[in-house]
Structure formats: structure tokens, C-alpha cells
Length: 389
Image (cartoon, rainbow, N blue to C red):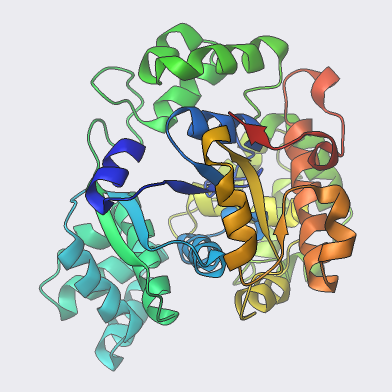
């Protein structure tokens, strides 16, 4: 992906914006962010920037909006490259513009579809196909969904960044099989969780195998939700329905169903199975549980979404031969650039320190999700240096 992106954009460098300690699936990241940053650098990225957990553990629209904020505020990105199932940028751009300017008919159809019990993504896809000639496939496949949100975010912010898309190859995103040229990330994670790393590592670049094997052998990975069951139960048992209602993405009385879930099971898997429904997908429930665990409420997310600029941009790592990019970022960025968190109090305002505290909590929780208790210590954000390859 990195090699192809550089070719199609004719770029001299590839800069990655990478999810924080919790990811868009609503789960703790399988490997910690420094390991993943190192992987990106070994595979050709020049620099890796962090997508704050407030965005990275959210729905596609918020995730993409946060990523574009990072790129826009960096002041040094001229092209955005993302994967998609079709590789058809023209159709995606048309769909994104229609979604940004919803007609009354579209809104009526969307409302009707939701009232019939469809999930929001399905309801939106069906409504779009009805009011246009665009296939609902554009809005119902996962990489398309995220890609459309990147495009919408670029248009909303009048960004000068030019979008490109690369057609996804290999197995479908949720295909559990490890066969074929490219297995899905879901299949690789599942194999690692089932201690089948030998077969899983046949599907990742050879240059990463030693580092990933070390993380697994030490018990720092793979991090899973189940190791957070105790923390999640404590949070749910000490939080009122009224407070859960204020958490991000909790709607329509879902807080009551969430609290009933803890009376019907202890394992996180059992809680998710109890809460999910035709309307609320597994992924959405996982994100909501993440928001509750992080105490992330709707007002907080909306506040940071509507700020003109991010409180900071954080560098997670860079290639030694491209070290000048860090200096260039510091010069061009529209907000403070963090490379050493110990200096954060001198660089950041109140909002920045608040966002950083949320990041620290997310990192601490991801560490708690590690298999080996020896590696669940807090404050890793302040003790682990940037990844430099």
C-alpha cells in the first residue's frame, strides 16, 4: 500500500496518520502504537503521526474528520491516499458530494429506512441508491464508507489536499481465511489470538516478523477486550444510566440495555452479544463500550471536532534518513508538535492537556489488555520514546 501510494501520487515521502491505543473497531489495538509505528516505518513510511483516541475509536465520520484535521494542520501534506474496494474515485467523489448536500427526499428515505429497523449505514446506502444512479455498494462496503468520509472531510474544510484511492486486493475485510495473496487483517488478528502466529506471519511482510514475534513471546500482544472485563464492569457498575446516556454514540435508551447486560454476563463477549441488535452493530457496541471506559461524552467529542485546529500533533516515529521531516513539521504545523511528552506542559493549552490526559488513559488501558501482567504498567506515553528506524 505504501509503495503503491507513493507511485500513484508521485510523492517523495509517505506520512502515516495511525490510530491511537484504541481503534475504529472499538477495540484495544492488537499491538501498542510504538510497535505499529515501527512496522509502518520498516515498510516504507517516512514519518508516523498519531490520530488521537477521541477520533480513532469513533465512527467512520469522526475517524476521517480527525485524520483530515491532522493532515490539514500539519501544513505539509499535498495528497491523501486510501484503499477502497472499487478503486473508482470518480463515483466516490460523486457520492460524497451528494451526502454532503442531502436533499429532502434523501432525508425522508433515510428516516423511513431507520424506522424499519435498518442500521444507519444500510439505511443511508439504500436511500442514496434510490435518489441517484450510484450503487448502494459504494456506501455499504467498509473501505468505501471510510473513503467517502475522507472525501467529505476534505470538501467540508476546503482542503487543498488531493485525494487518491487504491483498489483493495485479496480477501474481503472480514474473511476469516488465511489463504490467498492477501488475507484480511481480521483473519491475521484472529489467528494471533488463537496462538497461530506461524500461519498468520506468512501474511505480513518478512521485515516485521521478528518484532511482532518478540511482542507476542513477551506477552505484550495481542491485546484483547477480555483482559479489560474487570475494568469495564467496574466502570459500568459505578456509572448511572443518566451518565451513560451522555456518553458518545449512546442513543435511544441504549443506556438501559447496557446496564441490563452486566446482570446477564461477565465476559465482554457476553455483554456485546446481549446489547447488539439489528439496529446496533457489534462494532458500534464495541465503540460505545470504549467511550464509556474512557468516559468520553458527546459534548467533549463535538467540542474538539469544531475547534479550528487540533490542540497538538504528536509524532510517534520517523525514519532516521528523513529526520528533517520532524523539523519541517514543526515549522509548518498550525498547532504545537509533540515529540517528547515531558515537555507538553510548556507547549500545550488547557485543551491540549485535556486531550493528552485522555490519550494517557487510553494507553494505560491498552497496556492492561496485554496477556502478560508484567507489561501492564501505566505511563507508557511518558516512558517509551518515539520509534526511530
